[in-house]
Length: 74
Image 1: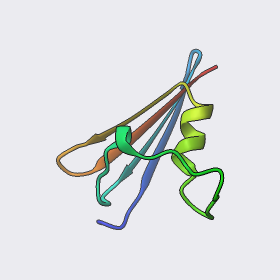
Image 2: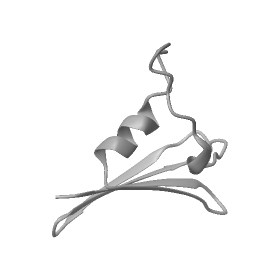
Image 3: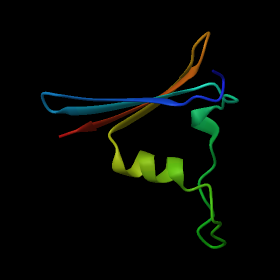
């Protein structure tokens, strides 16, 4: 269904790989603005923290869904 979010988590060797699949409106990961720390909001911090804490973050739009892949080397 279009309102379904699927998450896969794999740990192999020294890598944690998380993939989030959804059917929402796509976005350009490279053009997501940094949060305004002088005027913080209640939302809009998720991608900022993911990028700071993880080693790799990629977003791809596939024919049937969006995929956000997050990698952390252990």
